[in-house]
Amino acid sequence: QIAALRTDYMQASLNESDVATTPLGQFDRWWKDAEKSEIDELNAMTLATSTPAGHPTARIVLLKSYDEEGFMFFTNYESRKGLELAVNPNVCLLFFWKELERQVRIEGTVSKAPAAISNEYYDSRPIGSRIGAIASPQSKVIPNREFLEDQVTRIAETYKDKAPERPEYWGGY
Image 1: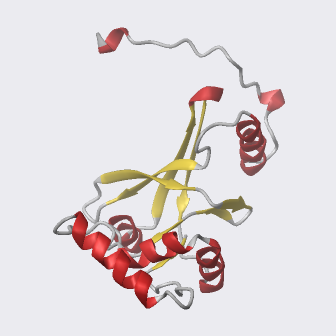
Image 2 (image 1 turned 120 degrees about the horizontal axis):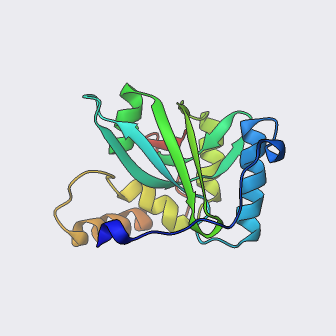
């Protein structure tokens, strides 16, 4: 029955005469279309990396900006994706905007963002998100939820009178 599932994509067509002169220009057009359509989580993108053995892995991350320099996202450098990127910086990003019957695939290499950019973004996040970035040993096995809740409580207490600084193990690509 799965094989019988089918959708006819008829919403729009793509003609060479309508395409922007640069890939980034085309992405920008489609991004603006996606913004107007009020897609939920339009900045959600699949990030595909590979293990040191060359096996592909993928997960959803959030796009935080894009320009001629590239597409920016933030994460824990010690997470599985961070460790994979340290060994092999080749990635693929995939945006799937079902409502527009569009997907965009971007291939390239990543590099860490300058500390100043990571600091600026980190400082713009809600306090709870900053504490969560410190408390969560991303991609690591934890004994139970209580462990994580205790970490959050302890770190929140540590920073009750001052804003938490960005940990070295967290930043942008």
